[in-house]
Image: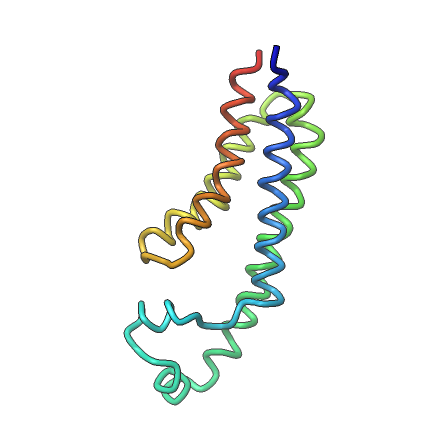
Length: 140
């Protein structure tokens, strides 16, 4: 018989790892504005830099903070997956649902709203979280 308990915590840990990787991307790699950002706001990079010269510098710092939060959310998710979720501590399912909705869930929904080029990638990053929750519920 398939043991669902270890798979649910492993999938949740994987989802947390994906958040850690995403956070590092935002801190170290992501440019202040992507081509899709300029498209969404209806301008080009030269016009934005001319109109608001400090925008890129300010946004880079915003993404450092946001990336740090994404990374720590992922790190805490990995920890919860390998501890409380695995041992089924009372209330952990609710906490994982709320944190999933408030983190990767919200980011995914907003990226669909703005028609981001990354919406499908983010949806894929949400799947381990959802599957872990389903497997958790299936295991009694």
